[in-house]
Length: 185
Image (tube, rainbow, N blue to C red; front, side):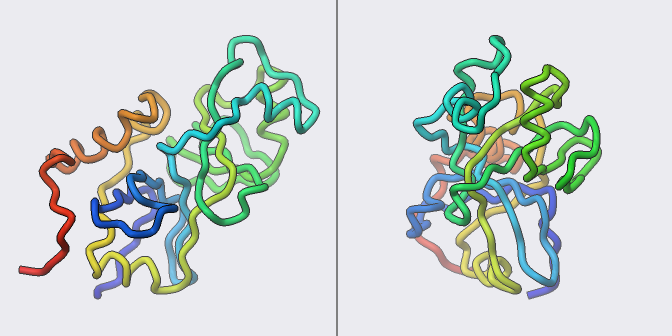
């Protein structure tokens, strides 16, 4: 398979995805290179909201953000927070993916949110999705995923249940028309 860089792309799990960590998911790829890939699932809310999370880490949450949900970003390091956000400033551990999306893993982004000085739009996840060198390319060749260039609007402005269908629409495909049978023409 030719070398492809899926940074700033959505991975759409195909209906035949057997891995329960990714079945029915939409994953934002924040970094993809020779060493592998790193992404965050953006449509799998968990039974934890920001209020409870901020309480756990000793921060107060602005009233306007109470009830905002936290996501399961993937099966790797689920005890660690990953924040996808619109760029505002550099935090201790920030990867600027594009002019519209950054990924931060340091607590200072959450401290800025607590102070009302954080990013305008953000999504907090626990854990991330990771692939070793060549693994994602192999999975793509096996028809496990579809990919499309990411649209920040899908991540930050739509409810979680609308994100996967919206990403499919970017491809011009209705998810219900996909078969769970893989094959090659």
